[in-house]
Length: 209
Image (cartoon, rainbow, N blue to C red; front, top):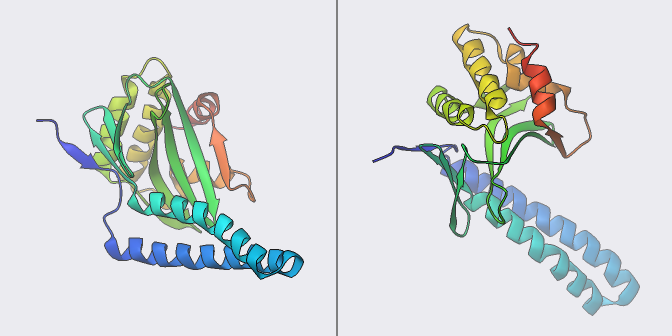
C-alpha cells in the first residue's frame, strides 16, 4: 500500500484562530459595504448588500479551513468538500505562486492536470520577515521525486528547486539564504498573488549552486 504523506500543518488551534480571524474580517467587510448601501438605499438594501458580500467570503473561508493536501506516491489528494486526485507526473502545467497577505508570504506549487477541476495547490513554505516555516525534509524529497518524473510540464526544473532547498537546509543555511525564501523576497510588494512560470523558475534555478 502506498504511503500517504500529509502536506499540511496539523494545528487545530491554528485553524480555529484563522477561522475566527477570517470570520471577523468577513463581518467587517460586509458591514462596511452594507453600511454604505444602507445610507444610500435604506436599511433593507444595506442588509441585502451585506448578505451578498458575506456569503461568498464565508464560502471561501470555509474551503480554506477545510482544505487538506496529501501526497500518495506521485498523486496529490486534495480535500475540501470532496476529494480529488491530481497526478504530478502527468500534469500539463506547473507554476510557482507567491501570495502576500499582511506581510506574510506563502510560496506554493500550483499543479494543473489540464482537466476541469484537476488543479491543486501545495504550500511549500510561509515566510514572515526573516523567519518562517517550510514543508519537512520527507515531504520536499517525495515531491521532488514525483516532479522529476514529469516530462509534460518540465517538472525537472521544479524538482531541482526543491532539491536545492534540501541542500541548503543540509548545509545549515539560514532561512534568508534558502532558494524558496529568495524567490519569495523578489516577488513584487503590493501584489496579493504573483505567479512564477516554469521559464522564470528555470532561470532562477540556473543561478543556484
